[in-house]
Image (cartoon, rainbow, N blue to C red; front, side, top):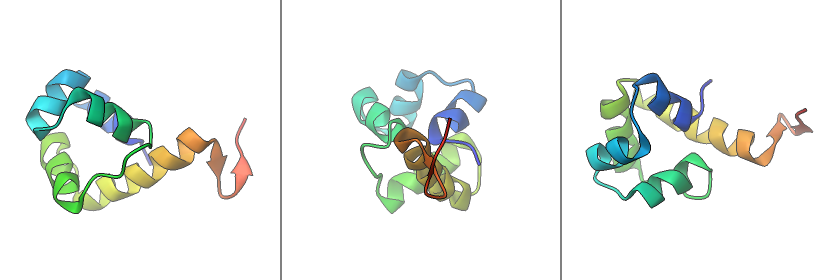
Length: 79
């Protein structure tokens, strides 16, 4: 599963462009992409529309982002 940042990059969107489409600040998007903020369900639906992926993929991407940022996968430190 891709991280939320990877989904944005797949759409060839800069952070500022994605933030404008999502109606949030670039700083808030950055925090989401770094796993420091958890977007609301309504915002996850917007991500789904903008990134053209099912909303379930957005939920999983948020989870994957947090796992990646924390350096853990299935409880194990990744190399």
